Length: 412
Image (cartoon, rainbow, N blue to C red):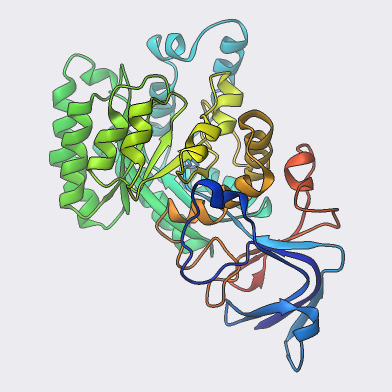
């Protein structure tokens, strides 16, 4: 199946094959072509350029994109989209003055989700999760990372990862699986934290590796959760099974987790609401992608990741949703884009770069996703008629997406 998109008002995020991420001042640059065409063949971007050069192209289907923009689909590199039930009562608790920590200390938070998931069948969990995946695809997400971490037992962590594996087979979008058994300490191990770390290393990891259930390994490196020592032990063990580190770090406290993550060649360090000069120095010269989760800050009313400090220091930055039942019950990358501009003072160019190419890099897939590049997967958003790409973050309450194309097929 071939598709020719013509009369594109503006084709956005046009890159050569060697650009796998953008950093610092370069994030201000968003290459585009006005009055453009794009040709899709065999699920890939085959050709593009100005309408003046659109000659002698025969396609099975032609789409007229007059007054519309075309850009790569969003690459959401941090989600917990596989979960059971919801935590709406905790939402009300926060309105009534309880903090995230206070809710967690009385059995809420991650442990609440874990209890619900442990009592949910694999089939039910799968059915709940695929409805969320369908929803975010319609909102323009074409590549997705999904974490475990609401199981917290050997059986339930495996259940989550098997569901993720089923979703990979069910949907055409690129999906990466992350093992996050170190999300919280289960109640049975609150007085034996070393015992739970040993369980992760000695029982969970071998079974996950045997069934090829994960691409990455993650740890919630935070005060009250997993210490630097715990994190280092888990990452070292995961790397022995070929799992690449992606770390939750600096959400509430900064105590050396970023430098330790860089030491272990983490693909990304995610959250970073708290950031020190030492963290910036540790990231410089590394291949680790900082990832901000602004809708989490919005929902919890906590500080936002200091995007200006990160970008002005010459570093790259990616944006992701953190879609989960407790702190970000939304997978809407369009809202993430808007929130990054409104609250983190990112420019629209920076935010689009962060949500596409840099998001793909944070999943290790920017060779195939995240930009308009010949040979990359034809995962595209066609907007409704809008004035410019600035309108995408500006009109934060509207859905400006008209069509989503995944692997060269119109799916929404």
